Image (tube, rainbow, N blue to C red; front, side, top):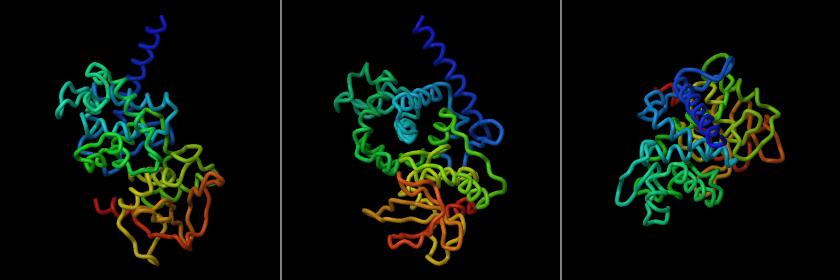
Length: 304
């Protein structure tokens, strides 16, 4: 009885995911909610995923949620599986690579039979990801590469927008659509989050970290930008200091060539940002000694 109930629940979950994935490219989430596709999807839109791919994506995402991991872990895992196997439980690959993540028995991932069990392979991926120091703050490609040791580490990043939307669909994340377009929608969303607590790795709706807030604000305007500050810094066209405008991103604390904090410019030398675990989303001056620079993600959308 217990296993039958679990199987029925899983089949129901798959059905719900298929319905959600079909609506990712339009709108979903109920009245007032928007799951936006953004212009920077990978070459395979969510609507073209077949049943096997949807089933495997759901398993990967649910495994992260059951472990209590941030949804960022699921985005990294789905991205990795998209790149390594196109979300298929492949029975072959380079050398002795197998399964969703193309894990190798000769590299200690398990026996071939174990690796070809999607649940086992996913568990192994998360076990190794969790051992990477500060994995939540790494650019996605760096986190995936630290687990996989791929010969093509630069290939992961292209899948992040699609993976983010798939995870949002399964996790039930709702972005409240803002009136207006472009910068107006970005600013309206950010203003609506004022006073909400900072939680490291959080992407809303009740708590945020700095880059989770900026990512969701841009998603409300129909633009999918990367998740972490370092990737957001590389995403948007740079803006010379003194020429920043409302809606631009402002970055701080350069460390090893990558900024560690990001805020959203609102004008008059001020920004909305999620500062740290002792504070809440708030308006503050961005005239800090460790200011790195500005970027304009909305310009990238306009250029398309």
